[in-house]
Amino acid sequence: MKSFTATPKTVDRRWHVIDAEDKVLGRIATVAARLLQGKHKPTYTPSFDTGDHVIVVNAARVKLTGGKEEKKIYRRHSGYEGGLREERAKDVRQRRPVRIVEEAVRGMLPKTTLGDAMYRKLKVYAGGDHPHAAQKPARLEVS
Image (cartoon, rainbow, N blue to C red; front, top):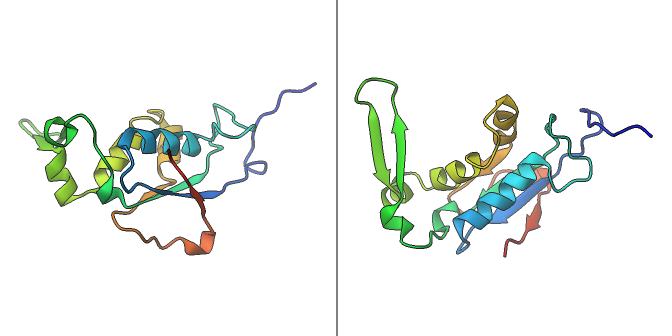
């Protein structure tokens, strides 16, 4: 019996919508990362991108627990000397709320070119609507 290896022809990509309103950030991120990697499928292959597309809506209303709204710091660096910028989560939520969900999911994906391909299938929107109705995404409930 031969072992199965996924190929581009055998991959069946689906679309999922996750509503992040009043849901904990970590729960949303783990479910999204699992779907993007394809680990929920029996055809999962570690060396190939078998994952689905994920749409996260209402990212502006995601819940942070344990005082992270005040304590959590998001950092980015310009690449120049002294170019480190730091921002608290509450400021990031006001300025660019999508970034909170994007960074949480990105941190759970592989740090390789394969992980980059998986990350490109993530679509995050601050509001409740999205432009992907033509793909007929299935609603996914996160507990």
